Length: 204
Image (tube, rainbow, N blue to C red; front, top):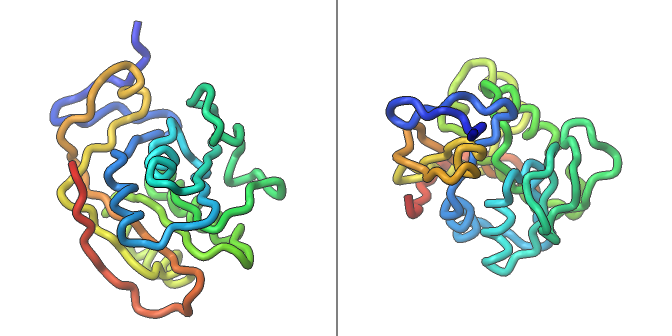
């Protein structure tokens, strides 16, 4: 019997217990097209490895970790690690690219803040794939975005579908998306300035 979340109408799924939702590879290849991703690229919540695989197929040195193992014999998987509590033994990186567990926005914010805490002299870029609704809200405007304003926002167009990973692992296919998504990018090499808003065209 399948343990995948049951699909509701209009491709709205039961909530995954670890908020594991899978973005299509096209959003990662799209990001790599517009941002300078180089050096060691780490995804600290890699899930089944969509981000890592897309980057490696594009020739990048990408690797991943996660709180649970969801891949088998993948040489790029560096083990089960809790990103939020896993210091000090975490990988060195130049770019950190992730689709963080959202958990009603609190998870995404915690991962973003943690990424900034772990920055070091050779780190130059942090990118987080989030629901567009994460851009709004007075608390984040006065909190996260006041403390850590992103350098760039890439609004993904057209809309893509990001179903639960367990739904896809059970052999199901992604349908039409019901949410909008964006990449938040922090360029760690340059001083803070006004956040740029851009559109990123991808294959649905």
